[in-house]
Image (cartoon, rainbow, N blue to C red):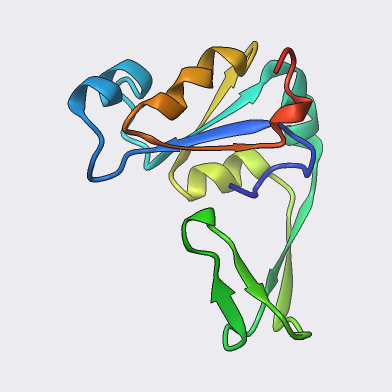
Length: 129
């Protein structure tokens, strides 16, 4: 969910135990990926040229924010290591996330009414959102 430039709008989908075959066929297609990551064509150049830094942190003081996919520490931590990620599409593929480049994210609005899990990030930056 976070292998993207900060302001890049994206919608990520993944099936859950409750996902129906109908929703999977309609929104997923034939993909064998664990997750689908949708971005707009106008963000592709930014995505392919951006560099991110992944910090490995000691886990002891972190708490899960449940379904948000995030963990937080309420105290300072010192990283064990820092890794530069220069090829974000390859990093997504390594996480078994299929990158789908679309003209607009707005046709995906209805996915929140399905049995797939959907996460939208920075959608205020999506064209026409």
